Length: 209
Image (cartoon, rainbow, N blue to C red; front, side, top):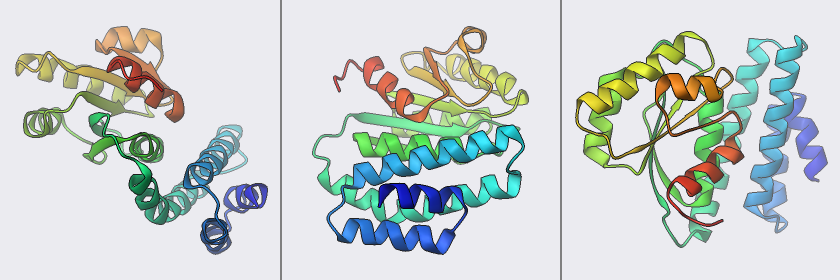
């Protein structure tokens, strides 16, 4: 059933994907395993997009299917979670409107036990600063999928410093980030994979698992 669900998501069968995902849970399937199937399917859709086999419309539809499934999977994951690991303020930085990578990371982080404050997309530096002051998170996560977002990440990091918000871990993610971008931005860590990103967040807080 997992493989069938994987294929339905990758083949953009929105109605069939949602129906099968609910059926999988009704038959006793584990929410975490369902999330992993969705993650693999989103990876496959991303690869097809990069190869030119899929276009932006397919990428966006894949994201919508993912979000629709997450609406009824996340509450189940949260019910089974007993310990809150920490709080993450998360957003796609200014000048970038991509949300799929951010949403996937958010789902994985919530499943792991983090509280996630999602600021959305095209988030200006001052909004990150306001959110950090209000929610006092352990980690700030910044996402970008286009080159213009790298400068926005750096400006956001500088704005946090200028506001005296130094004692906070910064992780960046997205298709354009790597070790050199991490150094440029002044972040503590980077990841281009959602599951790995959550593991790094745990490491930043000294949490095992």
